Length: 450
Image (cartoon, rainbow, N blue to C red; front, side, top):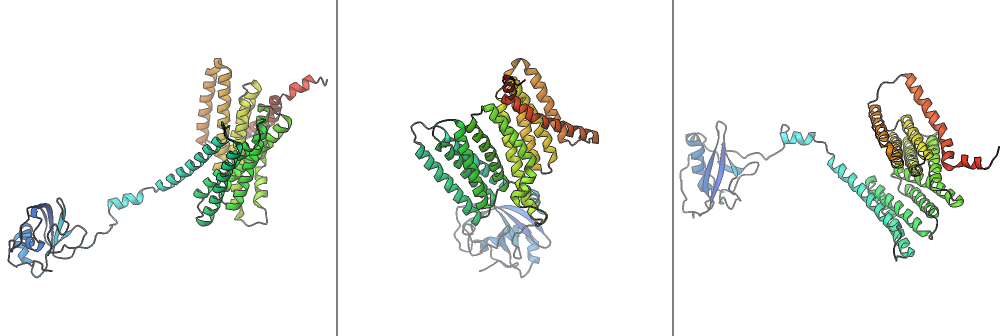
């Protein structure tokens, strides 16, 4: 491969064919004692070794003669030297490129520690992938829930056998997929949404399988199917313990209330009050239940503590959701007893949140309390439109109180003791209020016991 050396003569085309096409380039010359750059218009059809003498003279002039016995080379920035025996077009050079004229082989391009782009990339928070995976998980669960609800809705002209077969196949496929993903990949973000989809479709199948009749019977079988599916998937996959425990706790509480409603024909508000009472009992006994379910005790190793905490979190979350659902059902009655019961339950849930150290349990209890309070305020506004201004003031005051509590103000021991007394009084008032909602006092008054 011929190259031009300093001091050689022979300018011109040397018999080469001049092409009509041209290239507008920037050529930067870098030597030990000179650095410059010029914009050139060069013919694209002439060999590079024929253009090098003129390019060297334009960039370096007389200083080029001082560099004896060394090759001049044209190369791209960060690339290898061009083939001198080929034209600019053959080397793939296009208009607007920057070429480097050196007497040595340029080093390959590499990252520099002081590169601003490199520093910015290193300082960026890599949360995009996690957010996308979490969003896909949520979408999977939402779409699965939508499909389960659509399956459970009364179908016009669709036989129950077809819906039962469809739901059972989907639930089985989702359960098998969750188990396979857990064994092959071990990724909870792939296993948990499939498990929840299987649980939701199992509940839909249980709801559809009951012949037309009281809703409590269909709800009983649906909740029982959800409970069984959640426990089986928890044992089969071993992941998503908190989520599946929450679903299992909620379904167990709903099953108990639905069984009572199917046996004794409880009214909707009475069933809601019973569900709220059972939920508060589970929240109070959740630590002991979690220790029994996880097998944690004085003789067990310390690594079982994490399992016990996840079990406890699932129990509290499921009971909190059940408490909100029961209280919302009671508040729908819009009677004075119903609204009072909802207000006291909201206070109890909010005060119970401070007794837990785990943030997930605190958030679940506080969220259930706030949602219960919102439900009660909506019920008051609908039942007494003339008192809407009072409801608005109470809502704004409660919001300000929640914000002030989030700032963790310094409280005295007297305030702490006062809050404890208020919590005890609210807990003591729950059962009498539930009896009021259930009409037990009116029943006793009508029996003329005295």
